View 1: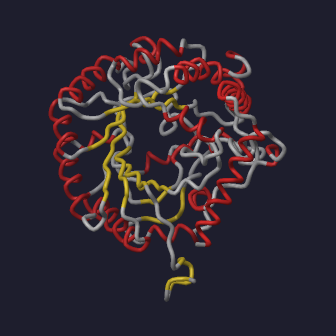
View 2: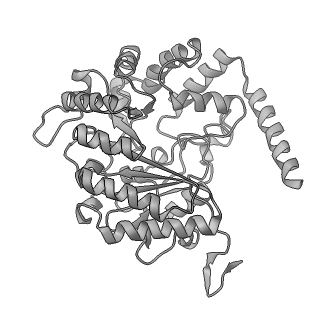
View 3: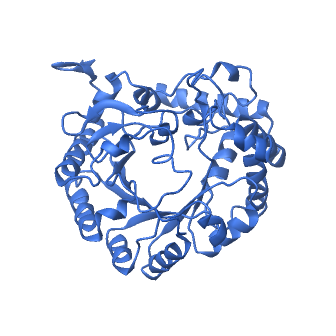
Amino acid sequence: MPVAGRPDVPADPVPFGLFVLKVASRCNLNCDYCYMYNKADSSWRNKPAIMSEETFDATLLRIRRHCAATGQRSVRLAFHGGEPTMVGPARFDAWCTRARSMLADVEDVGLGIQTNGTRIDAVWAEVFARNDVRVGVSVDGVRDEHDRHRVDHRGRGSYDSIVRGLGELGAAGVTWGVLSVIEPGRDPLSTHRHIAGLGADFVNYLWPDHTHDTIAGVRARFGRTPVADYLIPLFDQWLESGGAGPHVPEFWNVARLVLGGRSAHENYGNEPSRYVFVETDGAIEGLDVLRICGEGMGHTGLDVLSSDFAELAASGSLSAAIIMRGLPLPSGCASCVERTTCAGGYVPHRYSRAHGFDSPSVWCADILELFAHARARMGVTAAETARRRDERARRIAAVARG
């Protein structure tokens, strides 16, 4: 049933667990693989460099309204960019205080930031510690590996400044982890040892962002399954150690899926993402990595200055489908053994100009190889996964019936 006076807005809006605030639309680095600045979408050029106070407050108001409408008692805010530390520590500190104040009716408000780490100093570290901000830093490996791709606008590497920043976080007692983009052909075990040795609490390994229109060069250079070749030795080490060391969400998620659970990450499972981005101009957008597919792919036509988040459901946008429902299973996946676990893979990686999103992930062969290896190591067949998933669905249905 719609909201009175607004037939386009559902009466029962869906909870969103995460709101990503793109507080800066510029970056002090120029990483060659960056989906924001070096792929198919250049809309960032038309955005304000820094989110205004008015837009920030409007975002918090819309989040508060959404939490009240859904009754949710927990929400996470992630400061993102561009490079979010470009807003400066004083403004960031004030925004964290304002977020907790304006969302005081929500019991659990988690704050996080994803940063390239180059601007972190003792002042920033103290701000993060005081506001209990969970910090994610991009680190791709040892100095030479990292500096191959993560350079500033003059081509200078960023590794040394990041490591100095990580030292400041450690000294301030801030919990931090790493996002690391997989580079095919690299020794994964030495990379992981190095990142773990820096003191990371978690390591998210990110699959390189490609579409079917851009992947050919990678396959020509590194073969059929370069990402699986990278991840499988790490998975074996992780399994044999009982998950010791930094938390690796990728492997916990694969294991969860093999054992019949639901995906906790959008790489697999085709689950509704249930989170949104707010741009520096207040635009409400969907999955950010859709920028690799084309100009404006994530646009919804909504903004926090004039729209509630509940209006996404009726926007008719691609982002609304991804956020609220998940896209249909690609037709080529219908008979795949992993159709209910992988379910086509990460949406942006499914894209081609010829077929839109009706294709398996460009990393399909890698995903099948990784899942087959995980199944062999864990002793769980696809049939056993299906049985466990059916049992889980029956239990959930029984609980719903009371």
